[in-house]
Length: 281
Image 1: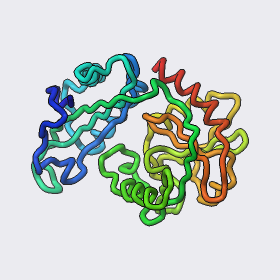
Image 2: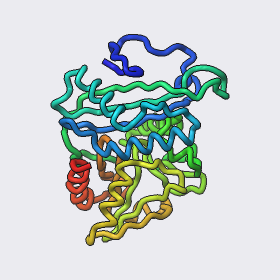
Image 3: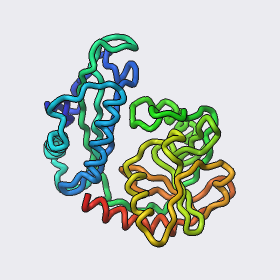
Image 4: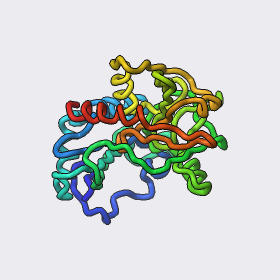
């Protein structure tokens, strides 16, 4: 079942017309949230990011769109799919209602909630090889729209095709200043000694929920020093570790970039702290 504006519908039922603005213009936002046994991980952060993003895109926020309302709608969808007791991947998509060409005739919105089961209830470090390469055919813009989790992700799609064609697990994206910004599906962190570095939002990276919370963990730690600064491609082969973060995988270590192979020691030490923070919200 999927939840369309509060109505539970069969997954094979047609919902949209050809005039849907998410389809025609990418005029939509989405949140991917991990749910485990009644808890939506970092739900408050997801909710406030969504509200802020809707304001930036001039979408009209319905009066009933409270954090509690959306949480109940998500849980209603999970229950309808008999997924209450396991780990679930939730996707909440918000899009402007149809009408108009590039300029919409309304700023009112609709939403869809989709849920899928997952194997692991918590974030785990995967041990398989995970090789990445730079994607330099197209560049990420250094602006606020790049920070949003919108459905305008054609650059990421083309980078994903490039990775698949060339046998890479992922690609690292570069901005218009030729600085490394993020991966196809998450934020990037570098580890060298006790220093952990990640690009600033001003470089055009996604304003990631796990990025935000992991930065708090690192900043509050006595073991590591957090640095938020631009990353040159030349740095990538000089660090001890590289890892990617997102709300579904948590922390994904990179095992190889070109000739350099990386450790996973810091990633493994941080994933436990991330799980603990997720459980308490």
